[in-house]
Image (cartoon, rainbow, N blue to C red):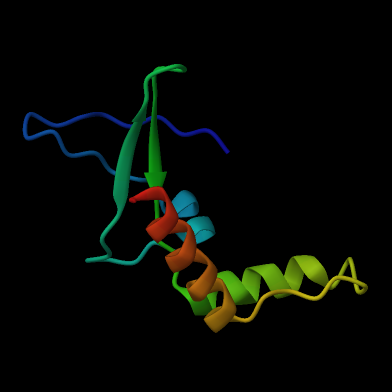
Length: 88
């Protein structure tokens, strides 16, 4: 999907409804923006919850039944462990 939008004088943009729907973006939702300097692109992170991630993951993994996914708790622990090792 490709859509065009205009930046207002206050720096705001409108995200087209089909994109908001596809990404599950709701009014008032916080989003993370990051500049990909290498490709001169703005990356928007909708900040999936663990529950949303698990649902998406489970939908994908139905195509690969031999794979056993991490539980939400195991995923949180792996993230915490990785963060601690990166910040020592």
